[in-house]
Amino acid sequence: MKVLSVTSECAPLVKTGGLADVAGALPGALGPLVVDMRTLLPGYPAVLKAAKNAEAVTEYRDLMGGPATLRAAKVRDLDLLILDAPHLFDREGSIYLGPDGKDWPDNPERFAALSWVAAEIARDGAADWTPDVVHCHDWQAALAPYYLRNSDIPTILTIHNIAFHGLAPADRIGPLRLAPEDFDREGYEFWGQVSALKAGLVWATKLTTVSPTYAQELMREEFGMGLDGVMRARRADLSGILNGIDEQTWNPATDPLVTTYKAPRGKAKNKAELRRIMGLPESDGPLCVVISRLTEQKGLDMLIDALPALTERGGQLALLGSGSAYLEYAFHAAAGQPNVAVRIGYDEALSHKMIAGGDAILVPSRFEPCGLTQLYGLRYGTVPVVALTGGLADTVINASPAALAKGVATGIQFYPVTTDALSGALSRLCDLWELPEIWTRLQKNGMSQPVDWKLSAEAYASLYEVVKA
Ligand SMILES: Nc1ncnc2c1ncn2[C@@H]1O[C@H](COP(=O)(O)OP(=O)(O)O[C@H]2O[C@H](CO)[C@@H](O)[C@H](O)[C@H]2O)[C@@H](O)[C@H]1O
Image 1 (spheres, rainbow, N blue to C red):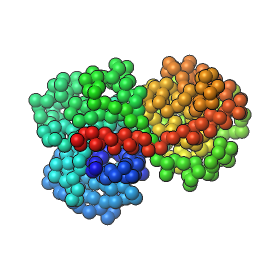
Image 2: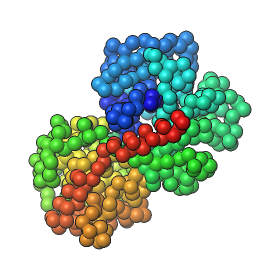
Image 3: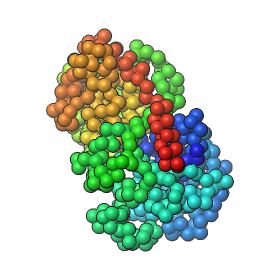
Image 4: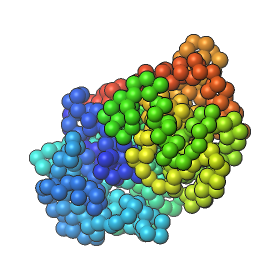
């Protein structure tokens, strides 16, 4: 089975969020299932630098406004096809945002070009390789199923986050190589604009998202971001396949970035080190960590108001994140308290030290397609405190009296997703922290819960067989 994975980011080469982790881990997870996956990725400067010996395999004279070259390279264990299009991708800084912090104005063209080339590879092959299935991720790759609409090549679109639609004004229909007759409610039109994501949702052979609960939520108005009707119409083709984590990178027993451990007591050194790095004093309460993009989705504005429920019981917070100016400012201000430490920025190495050194990890998201940091938390014996939504609902077993009695709980869930309920969850956390036997049980249960890719890779491999048949 040959599968072309089409993505705008891929760890460890280029990452802004969880999409990169998934795109980077899938090929390795699918290898043992005899799936030959190649990854089509934009030729950002960091990618071309990492793939210095990339070989040119196809030239395009005019790809959305300039010439481009498709290059093939192997970087670490990833088989890459890199779209080297300097007019679209040779830019320093963020891969999606210009220096003004706003989307690059030509983002629609940049990722339409990626999708167009995916369709070309699917039709004509590249480097003596032709995929059986095209697996697209998020809006950046969602035009590929549309460009392949008149072929019998099967496509899968995975929704990592339905909040991002890839909208463009209607006057871009021509430049984006779209057929004007499909600009309607049944097609890629969304309230008078072009929606790349909707095109994929309508034309892909199958749709997936990254947890079973989010698959159900997407069909509801509260979560569908205006596309719940499309999701309901495609209900029969939609499934939820839970993300796993890459255990080569995230394993407390082998992680080179932390003092390694196999049992919860091994966390003590990491906790002391984390306190030192973050400048936090000794304290009796639980040390909670957050590693997150700072956006509305992640619900961290509620955490600012709920913090007293933690700090008044001796608890501490260490937060690493970046994003909205308002939240960055609010957390800076919160860091004035002695038991709160905040790092604004993106720091992969620190994120490992935080997961290893924290007692608990907080993920109070308003919606969460899957969520990866709670999975890291489980693996590292860092008890997750999560909102009851999406993949957070599917991956954590709430410490209810019944689950505690049975000895199966792995964390704390709260609902509704409000400041009061989050405060309540932080109080429960402090209660459980004061019961060391139960606390250690939670940690051990989490550490032994499978969070790797095995089952999910099998689910993707079966889906590839279904669409290919
Ligand atoms: N400041 C920082 N420094 C270092 N590392 C940082 C960081 N901020 C975030 N990260 C890392 O980025 C990743 C974020 O992944 P998540 O799944 O939590 O959310 P995201 O919303 O980006 O992903 C979307 O796609 C993924 C993948 O499908 C879904 O799990 C998720 O629900 C969906 O919203 C994690 O690996 C995290 O450690």
